[in-house]
Each structure stands twice: as structure tokens, then as C-alpha cells.
Length: 92
Length: 376
Image (tube, rainbow over all chains, first blue to last red; front, top):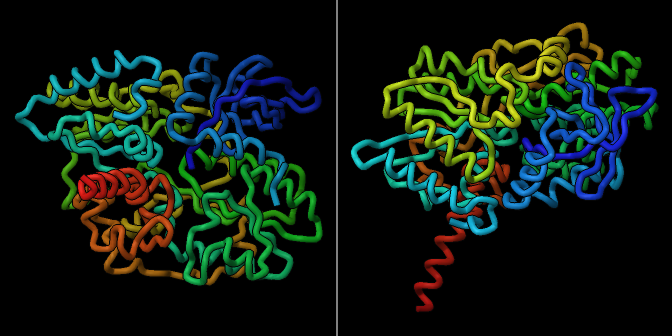
């Protein structure tokens, strides 16, 4: 339930500073940056994502370790499925 | 211990485990509660219990939002979705959780419009895409998830999207810890504090546990080394007779939390006077409701809610397991009437529930060992 997924900011929307494209394990989806408005990330930064919202900025090293943790917890697939589902993609 | 070899610093893990054995000695029994369901899952998954000395006992706490949700709330939410033109949207975790008349997935099979969403903002998107329908988002989660629901409602209000509402079941972790500490049969020495809840609330809200209750608490990450280091930090405090809040998960958790997330929660929610928790009963000020400024987006104010109450089956001993009085397998129903496929009690409902985690790892391991012995 409290899955936190590391993603890299690829692009921030020009018209909406709260909307960004992130990449997680090769999957690109749009997420919400509204909860980081006091400390805005820029493209290239890594964030921890929970239910489609960036929760905190993290270092690249910690992001890779977090991905490894998810793998060890057996939750990589769940995490990728969640990210793929953002924006109602593949949701029936 | 499983997975040690693939972990980044196996040497450091065995040195930390050695330090735990040295600090724990043999004289004293240590009872530590990991509050978060994610930690419970990690502890079983990594087999951490196998490398801890016997005099360190880990008690699994109430931090699994799916597990602690009373069945009546699921019935209430599904009852709203019986109204014409309502879409019931919820996270995948909720889909198989049973109400008295079946789970959301079973209602879908009977014709209800039930959708899985991975984000509250996608429930709002569903509302934009279906202007002739009403989308009700069934919100659950602790402070990790509540800010995302809040921000989504702020966006709905700002955009004037009126065919969207939230059935709010968000709960807060501190009152649950207080209820556990207040319980007369509770004997705990220390807490492993939740990681991702603390990215939002920070570490200050735990100070009363250290100051008033004289119990150490260490906010911890989810890797094996994180959990072992947190246990070392707790043992050092306990052995020195100290009680402090410490942050082992500094790489993710700021001491002050996430102020923007807290502002969003404060804008949309207010505390309920009380809320029922499966296994723990009614706890004062332990959940969030939507405040009157957002009444139009509050499913409980927009629709007639029956207010169904379902008492937990008497034979299920979830409360005792939650408080650490019983181990999961000591419950009379465990592994017989109550299994992950057919959960009777709260803690079997989600993979983060302590009974489900125990069933998946320990029970299977024990069954395997038994069958191996019988083959031998």
C-alpha cells in the first residue's frame, strides 16, 4: 500500500509546473509535483513517487538502492504496473 | 537469511547482526513494535527473524490501511455506488477486500461500474472523461496517501469539477500508537517508526512517545540493513535507559516532514471525533473527514450513507495479534478458516497484514520443512 517508487524527472510541463514526465525502469508517465512545491525538482532529479504524486526528492544513488529494495521485496512488478497505470493507461 | 548475497553490503549486514547480538546479550527480553505494514512485509520477506537473537521479539503493528478498515465502511462505499450513474474508483489493493455482500470486484461482476485507479488524480480524470457520470473515489491510507487525495480535491474544486467525490477513509498513525500504548495488556519496549508516513509528518509527532511514555522510537527505512541498524539504535537507547526519537531513514525523511503535503491535508481535512479500526475498536481523533469547504466533493455529505456496522467475527483474535499478545499462528482461525484467499480477520486481508505476511512466508516455510522431514 505504501509503495514508494523512485523515478527520474524527464520533463516538466511548460504550462503547468506541477505536471512532470518521469521515467521508471524505461516506462514514462505523467505525475503530479504539487506536493513538492516548496522544493521544486528540475529535470534530471530523482523523486520518490506514491500514488502518482512525487513525495520527496532523493539522490540518484538512493533511487537505485530503492529500486533494489523493491526488487528484493518482490514488488518491482507491482511498482511498474502501478506506474504503467498512471493516467488511466491500460486501466479497464 | 535470505537475499543477503544479493544485497549491496553483505559484510555490513553480518557485522550489524553481530552488533545486535552483542547489545542484546542474554539477560533481557526486548519487545519492539514495527508500526508499518511495509516493514512487516520486509521483515518476513527478508527472513530477518532468523538472524535476530531469541530475546528480541518483533511485534507487528497496525500500519496496514487495508487491514484496519472496518467491513462496514466497504459496505457503505459500495452502497453509494449502487446509485444510478456512479462509478466506484479505488486502488487495486481494495478490489478483493470483502464487504458483507462481497468485494468490489465481485460487485463489478454483478454489473457495478468499478474501476481500478493507481492515483487519486486518475479518479478525477475519469470524472473529466465521463461528465454524464459521477465518480466516487474510495480513499484509504495513512498520512503517506492522504496528501495526494487532498491535492486532488483541491484541483477538483479549482477546476469546478462537480461530478467527482471522495469517500474518505484516511486514518492517522499517532492515535493508533497511543491506543496500543494505552491498552492494559500491552507490554512494549520500543518502536520502529514508519518510513513513508514520516516523509509527510516528519519526526516531531513521535516526541510524546519518547518524552511521556519513555519508549525509544527510530524511524526506519525498508532495506534489511535499515531495519537492522534501527534495531541497533533502539538497543543502544534501551541499554542506556534513554528514550529518544531518532531518524535512521534520513536519506528520505526530513525531520520536519513535507510542509506542502501537510498544508494540503490541513486545507481539505479535519479530524473525526472518533473512527473504528478493525481489530482495535473505536479510537478518538484517529481519522480524517472532509471539511465543510469541500462538502460538495465529500461522498458522505452528497449521498445517503447507511452507516453499516459489522462486528468482527468473535473467533478472530486480530486485536490480540495487533497488540502482540498473540502471534499470528496462535489465533484459533489462522490457516484454517482464515487464509489469504479467504480472509476472516483484518490482518489476513492485505499482503502487508501481519497474518497474511506470516502465512506467506513462515507458514509456507514450516509446511516445507514438515514435508521435507516426512520425505526424509
